[in-house]
Image 1: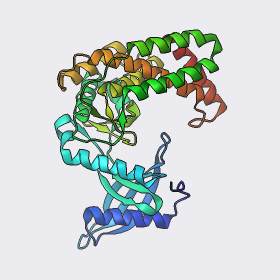
Image 2: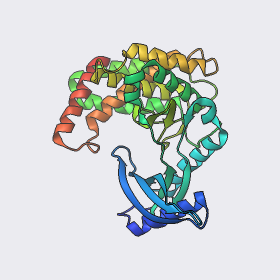
Image 3: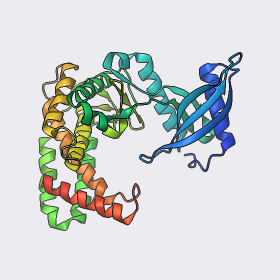
Length: 327
């Protein structure tokens, strides 16, 4: 494994941006100035937006470009994401499904920096608050299109792996909340007993789908962050997304549509844009419960994302509230 990237010098970034410019706009383009702006505090990888001013041969004016740089710890991870995005773009599934994904511009191997097109857009949460059903239906249609993409990542998320992860998280939560150990054990047994067989054909999955990975771009859904894409049951992505939407409606009462109505809108649009899948509703409901257990676990044990004492206390309080909802 390569060591994690250290502080990247301005010279290194300049080299990477110049390579991206040549790859996209021709060998004779030159970068005149650039600036960097942190784009995300979430996730495993540092993400930066680069504002680039460049000049092309014979062009009288400086051109302005916005690119996204994502730093990886391993070459194979960056290359896997780049391959996925290139295959999604080449397949044309975005145009058919009403969504877009970032384009790959260049990869600077010495610093494991993947450069992508910057896809502007509004927060999908703000869009839902303003336009409600229209945006929710677009999310359902776009996700159906993404799942139908003819892209086959190497990784597969099977039911056995999901159940194994569930058992581990339940055991750790029982240790952390001894007063709830019995109810947590019953929850784990119930969820294992309710697990439905997955569909015979696996689908392309985003793998970490939530509202933060979506943007609203003039009526089109933008999907971001393909670090965890895999193959498996499409109900997994839907369960993750709907659980996040549920949490948000609880935290912002009155600002977003009623969760039950929002959930129905997304699922109806998804079904209308997908092949018939009689067991989908049952599996989605099951994966929503799985996602809720995972969220309770992360709120309880993850102290790296927001290490401040107040933030940890707030996350612990939310974990306890969510735990009460699944007893």
